[in-house]
Image (tube, rainbow, N blue to C red; front, side, top):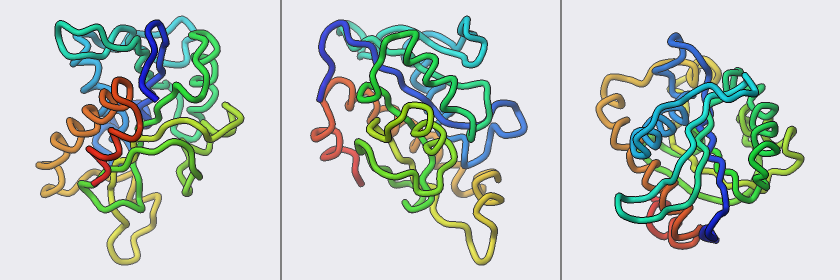
Length: 199
């Protein structure tokens, strides 16, 4: 469903805080959040809760009146991101069905993406934490494919490692496409967005 006037959306880019995690596959949600903040002409600032950084504004092409959005980047680690998101959802009076989680997805090949509403956690600690704190999994997800680890590499080692040199060339395009998908979801709704972006 597309936005109604006056509705506020929370767009949560999942990741881990701090420079040592910045280039990891697990942090692609943070990268999309940064791209959306840039499009909104703003930068993340500490929320008074002290548990997250936010950007408040409208997400729309110049000259149009897009939906009201709060971009969220928690200051906690991925597996504890649900608490700060629940706190912000309460503060901004946003129900789960107007929350969008942007995250890495092992079960999608690198450079693919899916947008959906609800579903399981699929072993993703950030999604599990959100579900636990919100009491439901019925929020939107923009799932950015990172693929499976090569050979016998441990999954946690894989997601907490940097993209390969070849992948790094494509990551900016992937991030831009995911940001486009978030904009589309908020303005045009789920079905149209899935038709455009579910590669």
